[in-house]
Length: 160
Image (tube, rainbow, N blue to C red; front, side, top):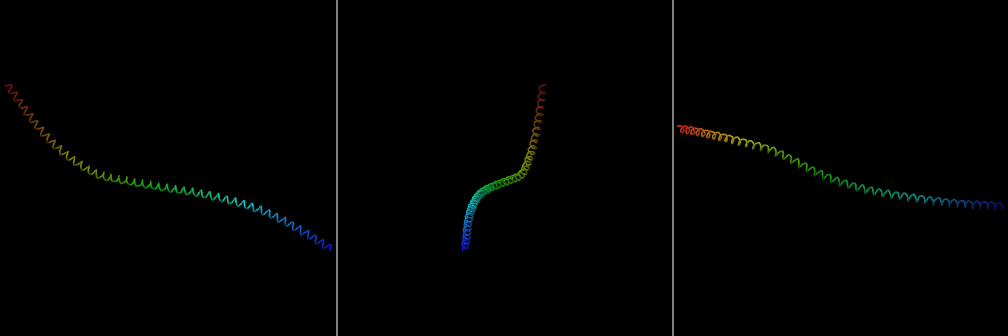
């Protein structure tokens, strides 16, 4: 029995040592797991913060992109409006030029007709004036001849 008692004591001691080792092992594992949980929680918080920052940056970038897009659309509308106004002004200028060209052609034809009419009237008037001049010249020459004759007669009558 002593041997059984000794075996019992050895087994009990081994059991107590195993239990003690198991408790230490479990405590170490518990400490390790707690530390690991804290590390993972810190990583998770860091990842959440990074995600929040990234989300905020993304939202800010989206807002800026939207503002830029709206600004570009506004500029595009303004440029289209300017283009349309310039196009209309250009078309009006072209119509005016075409109208002037037509009027110019019509005006040139009318001017040519009026010029021909004026030339004809001038020619007629010139011939009439020339005829009047000739008749007046003839009349004045006849009058001069008459006066010279009279003068000669008076000189003769004075001498005689």
